[in-house]
Image (tube, rainbow, N blue to C red; front, top):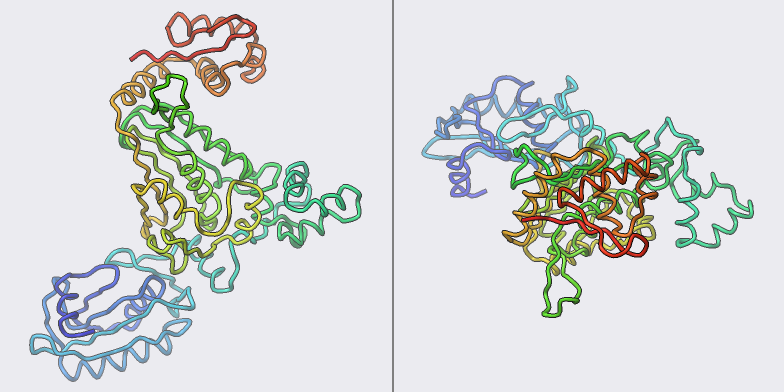
Length: 466
């Protein structure tokens, strides 16, 4: 680091990569600073500068003492050991000590008292148990998707779903399973879905009978806010989706697509409408969240819709050395390699790391945010600005807010299938056909719903009054 660079760093003040100290006397506190830098992205500790960036300097005697203190801390106060670079610099005719600490290659690091710390802005914080677990796993080259779920057994596998996948992935294995020529446990073990008598995380998430029974935080939380911010007091639609990966993907896609606006783009009234956000974009980003999220963080994937944008938020920052620019260029580092491999024949997914690159080709205006502090990765897709759409959302939100749960469900299922019958609605919602008819009568009177064509061959149409 040149003298000019050093002066610039001092003038910029303290941040996640720069820490000032007027002097150092306490070995434990120095060890905490070194550990925090090593467990994050590395940084520079400058001794002889106060918190305001004023260079106060240190005398020759203190320089000798601090050098000895740094050597002692490195050798006896930090596990595993680190190797910082210590330099004495002259700034404004005063001597300061500059200690450059690299990002650790053997994380996690701790003090000799067992403290695991990382940087949080210009300060430091204790590493959470979830983060610590992930760091230990990474140091042993253990991936989250191969973790054993000790409360599971082979009975928790949905054999129908497994066979459906095997029919696409490996028909030979499926035939051997059906003929009892190959044991189910052997097949699951070979696929790394089962180990030591229990399902792995991958086995449970992809083929479990009830995945959220053992992984309660791994679901998809969808909400369409009636505005442009999460602080609004009304929502247009809200749903929590649980199940296996294929179910989470299908339900999430259905939720988002059903709320988006389709536009006529050709003169012909009967032409195919265009969805305001391409389905291919949504497919790539939702699958990306499912496959590449951090499963050491107990949190849900969130899909937030607003009048002006859609946000897809997955737990966990980009793994290892990945950056936003790298993923835009198709560079991939797989956090969950088993999930990545199996999902190629389970979801519309290639697994080649080219998804974000394809998304950018389809929509260059998509924004990505790798939030290191919040430990999350967010994709923001701007919606087409359209006053009609805003009015539609507001009006529909007001109307649906006044409807009973059963009437909202009727509209939901009709939106999914315009030819749905009253007996089918009765079966889905769990109320009598007479109750369905009474609710439909009310929706018609409110000019929310109408029937087009005959009762036998016609269909339902949801009316939105603007």
